[in-house]
Amino acid sequence: MAAPWKEIVNKIDDYRWEIPKSYKQGMIVPGLIFTSESMLTHIWEEQVFQQVANVAFLPGIVGRSLAMPDIHWGYGFPIGGVAATRIQDGVVSPGGVGFDINCGVRLLRTNLIEEEVRPELEKLIDALFVNIPSGLGSTGKIRVSESELDKVLAKGSQWAVEKGYGEAEDIVVSEESGCMKGANPDKVSSKAKKRGIPQLGTLGSGNHFIEVEVVEEIYDRDAAMAMGINDVGQVLVLIHTGSRGFGHEVCGDYIRVLGEAVRKYGINLPDRQLACAPVKSPEGQDYLAAMACAANYAWANRQCIAHWVRESFIKVLGKSRRELGLEQIYDVAHNIAKIEEHTVNGKKQTLCVHRKGATRAFPAGHPDIPEIYKNIGQPVFIPGDMGRYSYIAVGTDIAMQETFGSTCHGAGRIQSRSAAKRSLRGADIAQALAARGITVRAGSMGSLAEEASEAYKDVSEVVEVTHKAGISLKVAKAVPIGVTKG
Amino acid sequence: MEKGFEIIDHTADVGIAAYGADMKQAFANAATGLFSLITELDDVQEALYRDIEVTATDKESLLVEWLNELIYQFDTENIILRRFDITELNNTRLRARSYGEKVDSSRHELKTGVKAATYHLLKVDKDDGYRVQVIVDI
View 1 (cartoon, rainbow over the protein chains, first blue to last red):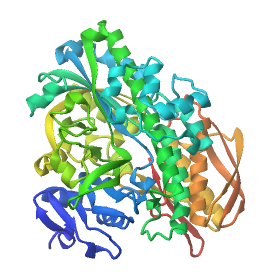
View 2 (view 1 turned 90 degrees about the horizontal axis):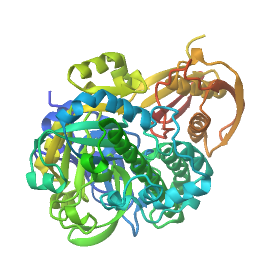
View 3 (view 1 turned 180 degrees about the horizontal axis):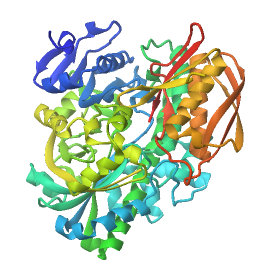
View 4 (view 1 turned 90 degrees about the vertical axis):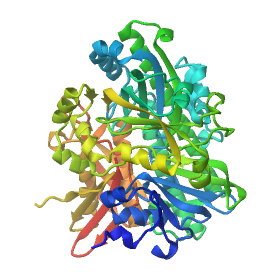
């Protein structure tokens, strides 16, 4: 019998599979999944196709409802989904961003090679685990008042740098310079602020982590050099976290508001979690102003954490910041909605680009990327699971033409968290990782089992698709040697 | 008595299906299901209570609002709740007194963080009794 997905999708080429509008009555545009035949067979879940199709209902959507190869079944939008809507007559949907607004990754380079870190690795991972509050119910070392929090929400990374967490150079190499414009703290509920105050400067739980990794392979030497990645064996540090309870509350608040707006504006939706409002409506504008606050909270959060990562390295390795390097390569968001200019059908348009579990991937020469990356394209970081490897890539012109300048964001789940927990034990995983030279500190053994390699697709297959399709190009691969998790 | 709820698998997240002879019982069982994801409830004592009131436009939204309010209590006050006495419930309003205690790391192992309850696959169904279903983002 033919695979069930063969009845649904049209193959465009080896890496592009279209879901035609005829799949579901009400789709305004077709869907397009970037994937390979073997992954389609492997990841087949009818719900994922349904979700790509549901997103195609959003008023004002242009091009196609897109899915990156790390796509998996989410709520409302699929995870790995990208959708662009016209700001003139289209909608913005908090479900197209998700609860963890501006969940993202920041990568630091070092002057260190693996041999210099190995002897101190246990101490280093312990120091990271102690210095950076993580885990469920953890509170930060930073105490801010509500009026001070408003400054965090308005300024993002800049606030953290002004308070002594990190350096002005970090801001230059961050998406949006670590501060999204249009943030208005008055559009944020006091409940969100109450959740946000104690959690500023915390890693959180779930799939958030800090990873010390070693460059294993370089594919594009010029691009790697531009990022300060000189050779195989070099040590990097990857930070993955977001806007914590603050972002969750903002998203929840606005799904409620926009759920009512759906009725008010008479919008037809197949899933309530896709709640949305016209971009130009008061409800839509309020959401964007509150979302920008959450994005800035997340940038301030990663900025503080990067500072404590540097402190931990300095303390354990007994070298100065300058000797160690520890410069920031870049910081990217992978849950966000942005107002951007794109060319659709030969016409320049202003669009609201939703990226939910997708990374912006702007090409060389784009005005929104830092000067030092002008010739190579915007850096993109694609973490795998903690036992395998992660990739560094750059954005491309093809991404600009086909995916509104977007690519994948990670490996993508294939096993539910509870299934992973049932079949695997945290303690065994820590032991197996240790046997392969990876030191892990986790707040909870259960959370370790949830994030085991077996629960994810192999990120190399995901990255191969984005590379071959040309929506981002591989620069380097790194393997973990130490991980801290909540 | 049979278990009042079950946990449903979902690739990235997790679902709760809860049952009850009436809607109050089903909503209370959904709340128990929620906190059972966070920690072992057998180890939780009833040392304090919180009075909660939520309103919504329909019974499905009310379930989401109810669970999100409980997540908020946990996230801001570090409180684990285990027993829910719902005193008033119609399609748009819920009042409840919920009992539990503050997290004590020497007695409670926290398992999973819950970000929010979602509207995806949300159901409040009445047949013989009530069955409610909600997907939570973890």
